[in-house]
Image (cartoon, rainbow, N blue to C red):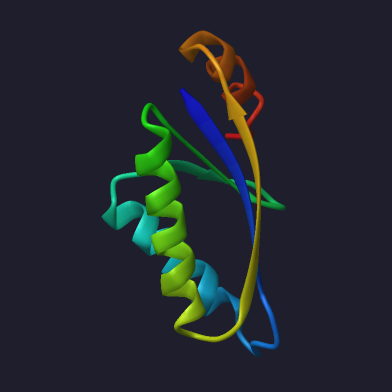
Length: 91
């Protein structure tokens, strides 16, 4: 299993909600499991290439609205190990 912590920073945009909502909508469209936290979005899945491609596609969708910077942190491991990390997510 793979988990990605993604921080998306719309740069120079007056309404950052537009880019963030476009990012999350694209994740939903691609059936990505994700959770929004106060500082980032955490996404997870079984296939690393599939997840990377989906997150990058969502980033491209957000960039249609203006410049953006995306920072990711990656964790891989057994399902139960990643599950323990995901248990720390609020909500």
